Structures are given as C-alpha cells and as structure tokens.
Length: 117
Length: 234
Image 1 (cartoon, rainbow over the protein chains, first blue to last red):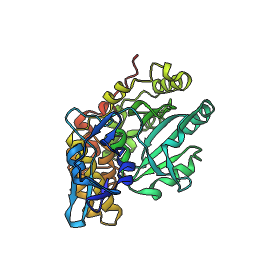
Image 2 (image 1 turned 90 degrees about the vertical axis):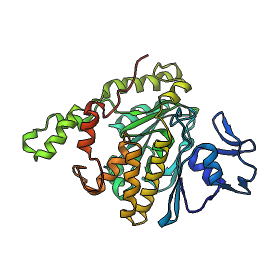
Image 3 (image 1 turned 180 degrees about the vertical axis):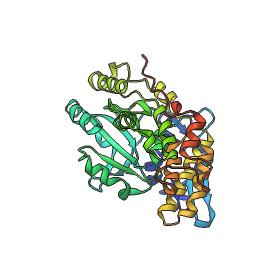
C-alpha cells in the first residue's frame, strides 16, 4: 500500500490490504493480532505500529517522501492467509467505473491475470 | 478464446474477470479489451496488486472463486483449452528470424502448458461445484498459494513504489525499486517482465539497467519450469 504519511485512513487501509480493524485488533480470516492502545486514533491508524505487529515491511523512498507498506510476511506464511477471497476493487477498462469482486457473489468466478507486455 | 468459453458458461452461473497487470495503464491495455469485445468485467491493475492479494507471479494466471467468494483454486497458470499463441509459434520458421529472436523462440517452444486438461477441470467445476475434485479445500488453497516470506513482501512494497514513481513521471527513480523487487523475488515474472519491457519491449533482452533478461532468466530456471505444472490430480 502506497503512503505519503505514516498515519493512514482506516477505511483505505482495510480496502487495500484485506485486513480489518476490530475491537480485538487487526483481523484477517480467523487471525486477530492485538494492537497497541494508541495505534487507532479516530479514523486513522499508526502504520508503523501495524507494520511491526503484522510483520508488514515498510519501505521508504526518502527522496520522494513516499512509503510502501508490503503484505504481512513470515517464514511459514503463504500469499493467502485464508481461502476467503479478498476484496478487489479496480477500474473496469470498458466503462472506467470502479468494479468490486464482491459484486459477483452468487456466481462462480475465474479471475484471470494477463498483461500486454 | 476466454470470451468464447465465457459465453458458453455464463448461463451456468459463471463469470470471467480479467485483470490486466500493466503499469502502462489504459493506453497499454484498452485496445485489447475493445478488440475482444469483452462482455465480462475487464479490470486494470496498474500496481500489480493481485500479486500481493492473490499470490500471482506470472501471466496468464487463474484463480477460481466460488459463489460464497471462497477461493477454491489459488493462482496457477490458466489456459482456455487451447493456447493459440503457442500454436502459432509451433508453425514458425525460426531460420527467417534474427538470431537473438530465434534464440528466444527456441526457449518459448520448451515452455510446458496443458490447456486441454485445464479446460476439462474448469468445466467440471462449473458443472459440479464443490463436488468437483478440482475444487480444493480451504487449507489446500492456502497451502498451495505462493510463499510470502519477508523477501516476497518487501518485493511487493518496492514494486509498488517503483510503479508509483514511474506513473508520476520519474521513470529513473522507479528503476532502483524494481531492481530491488527482482532481487528479492526472482521468481516473480510480472515484476521483471513489466520492468524489462520499458527498456526493450520486443525482446526484454539484456540491458545495463537490470541484472536479468527474459532469455537469461528463463535459461537459468529451464524453460520447462517457466510455468509450474498445474496439479490436477485427485
């Protein structure tokens, strides 16, 4: 997730990373990680605290004043922590409108990654 | 090819969602979607977020998602019954090509895929759902998804920084981040091919900018391993 500050809007964080901020902490699937008491402040989240707790790398490009928060990692981890499909929200090239994968609930879906290169 | 299969299976409650992993954005991708007259959602993923969210490392890759939004097969090479690109390569006379392109084509021809078996499995799942032996359990789905050590996670962060800087108009600033992504996750072809393509869109050949190139990196792993074998045993 791309960041221009180390406090991030909770809703943006949830939409981009697939983790949700709950009273018990940071949750994905059956996993909940407790957060330090000051990590959530109103609608914003302390990125450094979350990165430390969830094992997410935080990479900084100092010259450009931007950070990228990588996905949660660990020696035994896989790309998926749960089989529940993460939300995916991207523009549809046909219409330019944002499309949400969850709008296809009730149908079988083949998500097919391709590229022009 | 996907459009054809989609039309056939759509009445059975099946949908295709294509995702273009392309830093080049609308300019690089829309013409393909328009030409295919796609009836299905055709998404643009400029930051390659599906690598991070689903464990995609190469294209084409497919993920099966059931009616309850549960993944039943994680990212793996996906072909719609035939692979017309590979078929056209089979007929190609390599002696008519420049030598370095012919070298690339010789490697391409060694790449192994099984489009027919993949289609059989897909049709079976669309027909039988959870009863299909090709629909995997949640534990199996997680276990088969790509490893996510600290290296893969850092690679994702560097790739994302790189594409952001490139799209902000500072291509030079993107390069060190993309080089780092390649070093950290050498088996991610979307990060590598995307970056090489800006330097050499025809061959993705050796340059002074990146350590690797398509042909060198493919030879290193063996072209037959470019796509992992899709395990359709049951």
